[in-house]
Length: 231
Image (cartoon, rainbow, N blue to C red; front, side):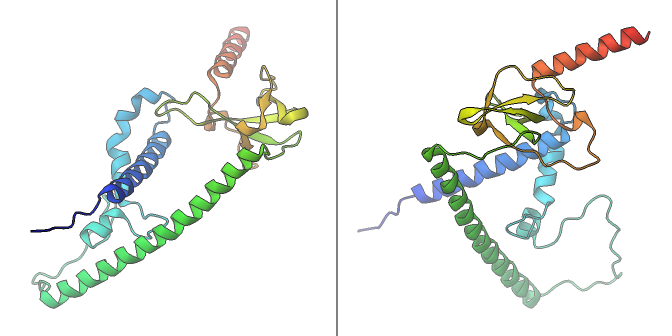
């Protein structure tokens, strides 16, 4: 008896990529919810972050995972209760079949949009890799606000520091930065570690952005000295 065995590598690779993508989304939710600045407290916000990822409508699929699984929109605690008739009729086989076809069509459309999004992401990453291989990078100008990539980021840590202001533009794509209080950052920074910071005009909250530990210690020391002088 002969049988044909298909390789499961493609399925395993697809599942792994989806798992990595979901972990990235979950990590971003944990960072938004954990406003304490302590990355070790991520477990305090895990339940809320998991709930948010399950009921949020995905940008690509246009459906939430809850809706794709159960066939109806999630009901949140603050939603208004539904008014039901005392003798509401249960759906029959025809209604179930129609709903099954609708959900199958929705999953196919979501899969198609995901494929289009994946191809667009691949093109974008290939372009970035090509730029890196050619040794070119984005040019910044003096006075622009930028974010600095955290090269030693661990799980739960911020991937970008800032915002900083460019004070000096030197040769070979290096820049001198200063923080919001006017302190120059020691050493020069290569432009490959920078990206533009998009700020609102009314954004004056320093705590809205993550700073390197050395800068945090310097600011904390200045605040303590100012408080002691005020007393």
